Image (cartoon, rainbow, N blue to C red; front, side, top):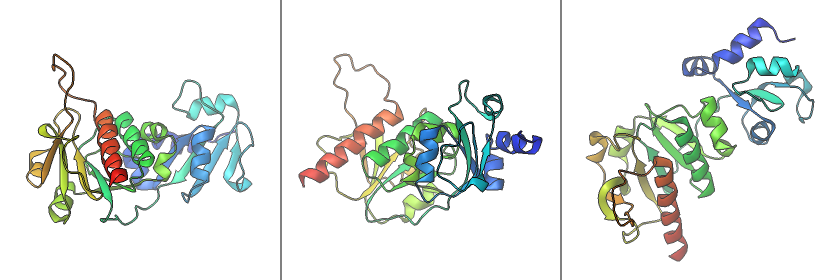
Length: 244
């Protein structure tokens, strides 16, 4: 049976402060757990209703479906829940295209953006300190394992942009048409907060403003979802790199 301390630990990891204090985070579901087991992220403990994982059995705890429901964040949990150690971020490769996020707050958006970075081969995703935690359980779930292949770094984004030596692109409602702009293989592209866009302090150090043009006849849509915008931006940067 699960002990009270085990349940308390698992429940506490839903909160950022405890994830940071303990250096641990949660992954749920067989597919997601296997993605992490096949990466260099270190396993702490795996709780499962079926012993189907190829791991050190000292790290595996078999539990009942009733117990799994007690510790899961989902209405219908899938077989297992695992606790992993939060990995240390790697050095940023400044010679490649970098994606930067300014105060993204929605876990689903961040998770999708991490998946997009993985899809388009973006190695480094830099985030402002007020962007949602990438080890939030909802973010981890939304990445579908892509977080194991993208280096997510939290930092003082304003300072990082100021010190960056390459071209800095920002996404705005008013800017140069992304489909006709000159887009290099390297540089940094910044996407802003869902409601407020890129902050003014960071905008001051943006070299080129990019916009995704509206093609609809009425042109009354206020904006695109930030994850949708990321998909379009990365698709266009990738297409140009293939053509050159």
